[in-house]
Image (cartoon, rainbow, N blue to C red; front, side, top):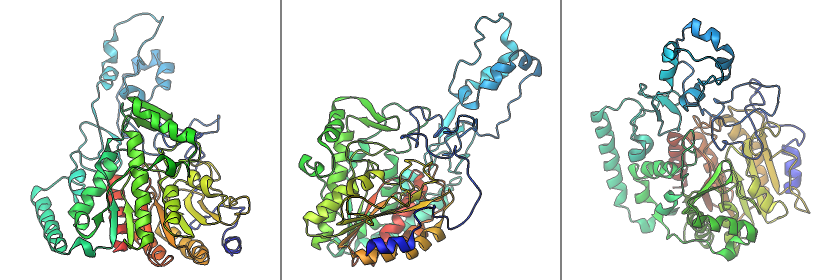
Length: 504
């Protein structure tokens, strides 16, 4: 029945393209297995076409100096070093690359180079909201407009992004505190939404910053938590569940022993990388165990009826983690662990809907031969050129489970609310309803949100709330939302808050 619905709704030979827009260069896409960000993160992706020389620094907004900077260099000096100047970039200048050493060329007075030499001393600040680099003289982020001294980590997305008016901010927060006091009078025993969170997950971080702060950073959780607290949602209208670390036996139902051991040994080192973009420090293994444990327990709480729904405010994310490898910022697959925990608690069929902008290749691999778990993913694909390159429409499952893997691949960036809602109504809901799951899990990456530096799409908090509302009807309201990606703090905190409110 699921296979028939899929064949009617998805054309396996073409990309889903609901709103035709301009063509996109292959540069804005996949670079091997680690296309999200390179080890030095000087550019997110390089073009697979060797003949291409397009600068991709702006694909995911990983740039060091705004393109509007005007550099005045004396023409006489340029004549002698034309070839050298053609090879340097703003990024080289700001990263203090030794671009002025002429080797065997004749020594001469370098006073004419003073304007360029000063560029090597440029002071930068990195935006709290989107991590982009800006010149020290700038007050607002050139990429997202966030104020240099943003209060988003204190008050979440309620903090204004513009120049802060202290009186305005004080008034807004007083109103929020009033609302919070009113909802706090409601007993949390009457709350139906459980939240999974533990501060030890904030210890998972990149030890040594490369050219930019890593997008998957502890501030992601801080911003969401600050937004929920300011709104009086958590603490307040939602209740926490106790944190525990997932056991080795539970992980072995999802991952290979070698993969589990590879994550565990990171607790003995200061810093290491599974892939150029997937880091670990001595706290990462515990953070990953806590994240998986919280997700598993939330699933059990919901299936048993002790909670109506739940939100896992966890990191590191998980949907790229496959049977044998950690990748794409992910160590353990939280959604997969949750699905099996739900089945252990009594659920016969589990639906996983993955709306992260990247395909959940790990989750698909784990369940592609399993008819009791239906996996549906909506993601940028661009004919395999967008990270991780998997998730074509004709990937439908294997070994008798054909039709239990459904991919809705977008052919370009810029996809927004209307595209997602149309796909939900025409593809996701008909197939999900035919499957009739006992629990619905959302792999909720918010990197398709408007303003995200990696996703480059246009989904709003309202759009995410609408998708949540539609999925709420599929399994009688038994819904678990698990945080995956999302790297613009204002976008992920407002979107996550909208999703949790919908669950109430």
